[in-house]
Length: 472
Image 1: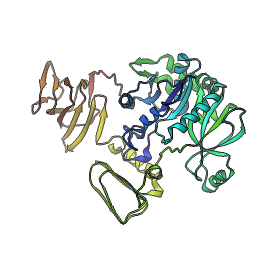
Image 2: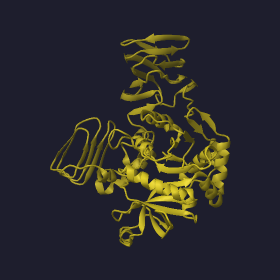
Image 3: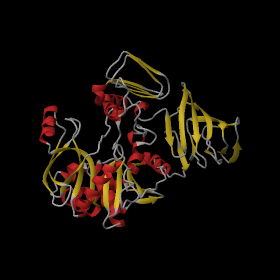
Image 4: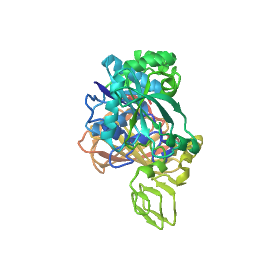
């Protein structure tokens, strides 16, 4: 059987602010250990027979970070498909199915979000193998998590009759997130599972079902794939055609309508880590019930979560709280109200504040930059350029720049000049001058950039040439 992981990376993770942000969201973060959630997801099925390289569906802004994280695992992508704008999970799965159906007629997709935590990989792999047997028979299979408590934050699946000679059941119904009393009733009944949002199904079967129940989605996705372009590992679907698709989830579009829905129970632990309280629940705690990461000191404090990224965090006399410190923001919350963090993010977005979009360190395909000082008409950044990487050939209408090399070697294009700078050397880029920075060396290039001018926004960039073919 040919299994293809289809990893959907569209989750914003706004309830995990200030660590998760729009341009560096939850799937790309190492919330547990050294690997990111996306990397854990990409490696989760390594022991499955017949497994192929994963296919990712992500947006334009995150494509290089996805590719870089996959490379650091020593893996290759079947493809990284780029959505011009999120249209929920049904269109994302449809473009993936169209791509894979062309590649392998019997392709079985294992559809996973990139931001879930599943600690027992062997049990997960076994459940996927069982689901694959049913998918081969034409079922659209979802994995149901054995409920450990009356959870109100998840949807539920009620199983129906058992499917002969298999580990699965027909789905009787899907139900929305319940109140506590209803959730307890589901737990007591013993026939309900948490809806994991993980699916196992043949690509051709999905295309048949989406054609039957949401033909407008299929038509828009077919048109977007017909006009798609390939750029290295990236497949960029046509923007105009894709945005014509209705936005809908896999559950609403097909699973709640089809007569082919089946559920295979998954006994391993599972969490969608949708809030800081859920991070606390799945993390190892000390004798006082605290989860601490970073330089954290506690006294007379219990049942809490603390993360410090850039300084010492000291806590005295608190219980059941969450404190998250980053270089440019601090969150303090009652652990029972972590779902409401999303309201803070909405306020930041409404006020057009950068803290909902970016961290103080911003990642680019060539490396990263970090703001270290700013004033009315100036700002100072630290840039790190990866070996062999180069920024776009560009100019600015409103600012001039000074570059000082801290370490490594820089190749600078300034107008018609091209020259080399070494450590402790500097140059000046006048306003309106075409320029480019490159790292021709074998170690990272670090420079200090001092910008001065009447407007210092990142949108004051006119690109003439870009080796990364960025459209945003």
